[in-house]
Image (cartoon, rainbow, N blue to C red; front, side, top):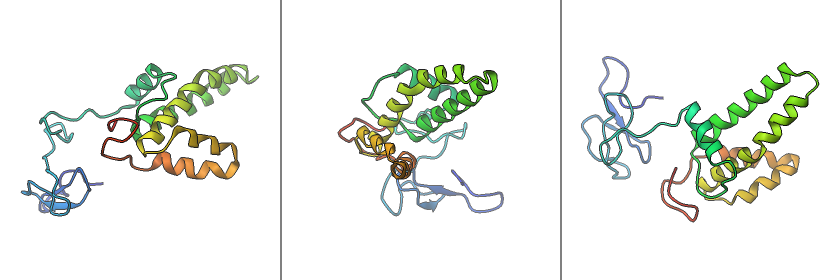
Length: 166
């Protein structure tokens, strides 16, 4: 995906941070939704309204955040926060199975990350303006599909009943 400009030799085009529509390089406002278009900073990160680069969720930061909110079912979690943490738990589970073939270590690891995964999933659903209780439909085999789709969906950009965007 192109973030701030197109490939070499082509006209520089900007993408709206709100609706994602393509705009001319010199545009200050989106032609589609009217949102402010701020040029990316020198580091390549989009600037926030205050002009500072927005913080990007990294693998390590997602792990630290989710463990810091071990059983916090309130608030919202961004897609990167949730998916980086989910990847970590999968890798941790696989690693524990490789280390201990009797599955004892794997069971301990899965029990240790069970609540943080449920809490992160709940906060992720809050970001899509859904209750965390929707995770219970995963107990039915077919219910896994909508929950994964909701986890992967873009969260709402506005405040909702669960708080401000993550």
